[in-house]
Length: 97
Image (cartoon, rainbow, N blue to C red; front, side, top):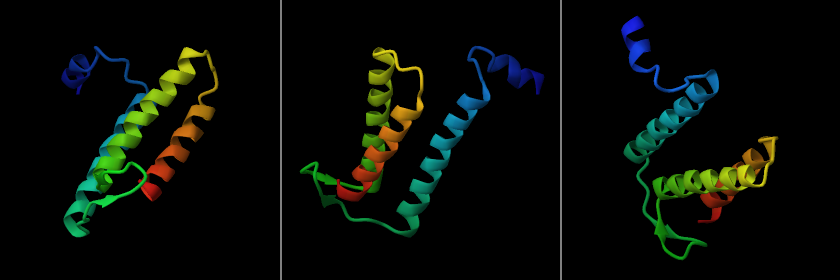
């Protein structure tokens, strides 16, 4: 166990970063299982080009990064607001895109 800790010491592994990467890993597992057991055909939504669930997940994660960077740039200390904005955007993206 100490060997693994030494090789991961370059990054500040707090419980928040572990939850974040765990959530990303869980989303990838869920999307893989959905793709295997419930295949989807791409459809055109508000983005005006054909997207699948995986495309919408990627776009939501990318938009979330930009939302958080925007809030950080303007000095917002409370990350509840960008989190809510990101969740709303993801819900809209999965529903209408």
